[in-house]
Structures are given as structure tokens and as C-alpha cells.
Length: 284
Image: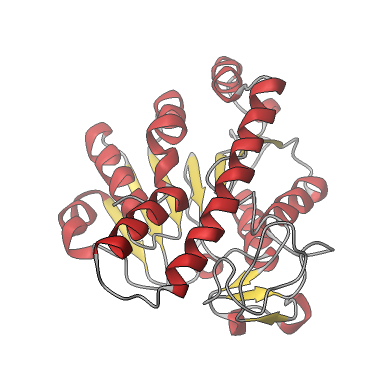
């Protein structure tokens, strides 16, 4: 998510001029730090939601104490009552969690009397657009949980792979596609079932980013500026999608090569790790 900050998320924030920003899923704290620094600069407040301690917590403690409220609980427990102009969703990558995140965000607003927020969601591309992943499977009710295994994913393969693959240390749904499976499916189901005229714009790069806005429930000047910012020509969109396919092929190959090396130290492994992080969209 941090790869999108300067190119898309911060420009959206500059347009909206939010009084507060809510982030679901802080992980290593890379994007969180950018959000906190932005809030400090413009006088806004951040709501940071993650059941696990934030990475780099010591580095950003001063910012948290100054401009943020941290909720060390699930998004479903924290979201009711958190009203922000912008929500950044990058938590659990499964249908149940994301679908209900969207509904809880929407429920915080009265569309008859106030503008609807902008929702920015990560992982609307491969591998979790159409496949669930569970950080904690027991948080998902059994009736919403896909059969899963701790095995890797390979682009173009609907099932999981016995050896290697991407994210082999996570609990991934056995099969890609089908009802109630994946982040993008969750967002599409939310949009279809909502009484609000949400518009979803997606960007293919770095596992995909989705931006939701409600054109008829926002300032029309802001709407025009936002839609200009989000516009990508058909040919440019096709090119970005092709680049992302190449990136995920290389990413999977790098992950498998790293695994085959057995994590042995040395210059070759160090170079591979740095390359892997670049292709995975992580800093460092």
C-alpha cells in the first residue's frame, strides 16, 4: 500500500482535505507513518485499526501520541462510530472481512444529509482479488470461510501448489474464484447490494488498488477533480495490467528461488532479498 502513497493516496487526501483518515491494517507501519506525517502537517486525526501491534511502533510513537487513535482490535469491532472522510482498507484479505468492513463504513453515514467517504482498498488484483486469505481463520464464521491450506499460489493456477508459490506461509483458499471468495469479489458484492451509487475505479499495479466514491453524494467540484485524478486511458490501463502480470510472474520466481536457497547468508541472497522486496512493492 505504501507504494501508492505519493502517486495516488496523498493526492486524493489533498483534494478532500480530510479532518480524519481511518486506516484498517497497519502491518509494518510503512503507510501508517505516511498517514501520520500527513495528519500532523495538515492538522487532521488518524484512526489506525489493527489487532496486532504496529510494526516500527517505536519509530512512530511520537506521531501516534500527537495525531492518532490506535485500536488494537478487529476492524469489525472498531469501525462503528469511526467517521472519516477517507478510509484506507488493507486488513484481512478475505470476502467476509472486506464485505463487512464496507457495510460498516457505509453505515456510519446518512446519505440524505452528508457526503459519503472515499474508500481506498488494497489487494483488488492478484492473488487475492478472487481468493481468500486468512491471517486468523477462526475470526471468520465457518459458513463464510473457504476451504483453505497453508500452501503457495502461482499465477494462472486456480488451485494451490504443492511446492513453492507465492505466500506459501499463509492460509490460502484452495480454489480461486466463485462466490464469496476474495477482496474484489467482496467490494463488487457490496456495491451491488448498496442503495448508494458507489463507483469503483481499479489500478492493476502492486496487487491492485481500488478507489470507491459516490458521485451523487459528494461535492460536485470535488467529484470532477477526483475523477480527473483517477482517469486512466484504456490503452494505459491495458499496459499497466500487462506489466503487473509480468511482475507477479517474476515475483513468484524470486520467492521460489529464495526458498530454494534455504535462506543461506551471502551476497547473492542479500541481492535476491532486495530484488524480492522491490517486486513485492515493499520498501527496503
